[in-house]
Amino acid sequence: MHLKTHGIVLAQTPFGSQDKLLTLLTSEQGLVTAVAKNPGRGKSKISAACEMLAYSEFCLFSGRTRYIVDSAELENNFFSLRSNLTGLSLAAYLAELTRFVMPQKETAEETLRLLLNTLYLLQKGEKSERMLKGIYELRLMCLSGFQPDVDGCAGCGKEDGNFWLLPGDGILLCDDCFPEYQKMSERPVSRVIFPEAVEKAFWHVITAPMQKLFSFRLSGDAEKAFGEAAEAFTLFQTGGKFGTLDFYKAML
Image (cartoon, rainbow, N blue to C red; front, side, top):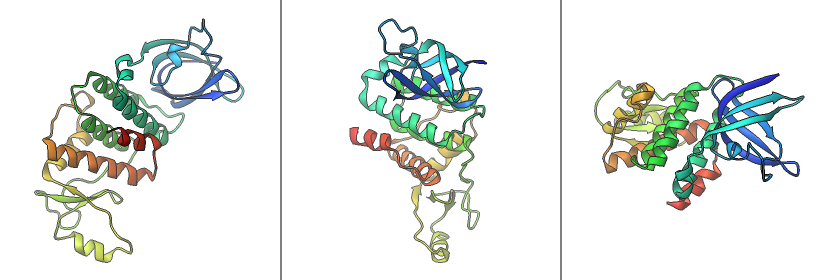
C-alpha cells in the first residue's frame, strides 16, 4: 500500500549503515516515521527532500513495520534560514516540541500549516524570534488540547488589569487572590507576570484564524513578558526538557 502525502521532516537519524529514519509531520496522519534508503548517495533523487526541515511531497510504501520512502519531491527547504544559526536553532526546537506533543495517525493539517507559516516568517526575519517562538508555542499547545484560561482572574472574576499566570494550572490570578491560592496549595505555586497587554496577546493567539494569527505587535517589555509566559506555560504543560531549547538560548 502506498501513501502519498505532503510533510515536513522533523527529525533525521541514522538507520543502519546508510539509511535514514525520518520523522515526518503530515497533514493526513500527523507524525509518520519512514525509512529513506541511502539518501546520501551521490545520485539519490530524494536526498534534498529528506533533509531536516525539508517540506516535500512523499510517496511512502507501507512495509512490514514502517513506511519506506518510495519517492520524494522537495517543495521548500527554507534555504536562507540555514545560514542563520539562531534562527535554525529555534526551528530545531519548534520541530522537537512538535514531535513531543503530536500523536501519530491523527490529522494535523492545522499544525503543519502553523509550522510552515512560522518557518516562513522566521526565514523572512520581519518578526522577532521571541514573538514567533511564543506564538508557535501557545498555538501548538491549544491545538494539542492544552488551552490556558486567560479570561480574567480565576479567583474573583476580575477582567482588567495585570495578573499572574500560573503555568502549571493554566489560569490567571490577580494580586488579591494569589496569596490565598498559595496558602491553600500543598506546594509552592509557580507564577509568571502577566500584564494586560500580554493577556490580550494570549487571547489573540488562542482565538485568531490562522490568516490573522501573526498580525499583532507588542512593545519591548510586553513582548518579553509574552515570550516568558508562553514558554513557561509550554514547559509546565508538557513536562518536557528540550535540549534544542537549551541550545537556542545559549546562542542568544
